[in-house]
Amino acid sequence: HDCLETPLTLYAGTNTTVAQSFATLVLWYGSSAGNLSPLQEHIAERLFAALGSGAAISRSYDGAGLFAFDLAQPTPPMRATAGATVHPALRFVAADGQRQRLADLLKNLDKGILPEGLNFYGAKYEVEQVREVAQRLWQSLTLPPPTRRTPRRKIKVNLKVANGFSKMLERSDVGLSFGAEESEVWEIEDISATGFRSVIPMGRANGIRIASLLGSQPDGVSHWGAGVVRRLSRDLDGNLHIGIELLSPRIVGVPLLDYANPDESGVQIGMYLNRPNDNSGEAWLLMKQDAFVANRSLKMELGDKEYLLLPLALVEQGEDYDLARYRMMEQDAGSED
Image 1: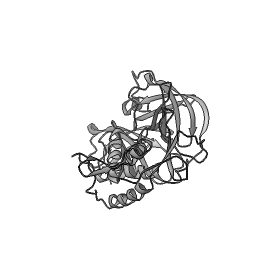
Image 2: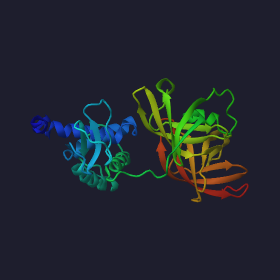
Image 3: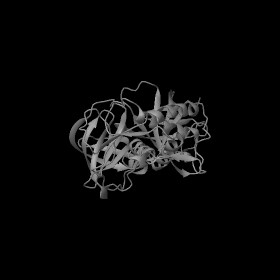
Image 4: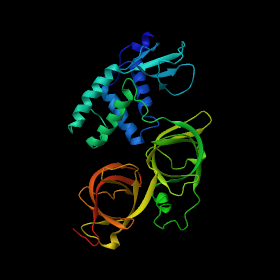
């Protein structure tokens, strides 16, 4: 036990202990593995390195433990709960000291300031990129842990899936489905108002990763919806557990033109997210990657109406898509103003 707490120098100017380094590693894994992209995981690791000491390992659960791991079982760390069965091989990891440092770091990031102590090995990241990851870590380190927004129900339903922007576009209602390959079929394990979980063999998960765009069509439903992969984990049988956040239960393919230069040769096809009970006056669109421009308004045809779309924000960017918000203003027929 003494060797775990013996101070040591890993690198010049970096003093730690074996216990501290291991506890920080568990916190990083528990906070990021399976729910952050590889780039975000790298940023998270660098953030934990900057937070320094403040993580601790204990043999008992005192309410401060965030994650638990079993010395006798080769299983990943799990979120600690008061109802867990405690046995001699169980250890708990707390982050009381790091939580306050992370709060201070977030205050700087909220002001657009990237602290000098962050070492990204020469890589340059936007403040907003780092702030987003830091905010995700803050949520993971919060006590008590965040509660699920909507209840999850066990259910067995088959649904067709389409991985990626182009495959989703083929299956939207814009007449581009000629020659579309047969859709993959998954089975839903459980579902809520905001998403669902499926379990599939690893061999059927080609191209599936965190932040992948996924189209879905449940049995008996005529239209397709859109979601984003938020969680991935693998069980002992080698199956992949996939958690999908539902963006919209129905996508509608729409032509989009630059409003200032409505040349039809520059038309692009996007997907309008039909969001039930959304009275915000906003349009959420899925477009090909890098299509969103913060100072470029668009013209959209939806049904038999035309709309002016004023850009509000790029919500998310994946490997092959932009998810963006626009202010949506109905136009009179033939109006260009």
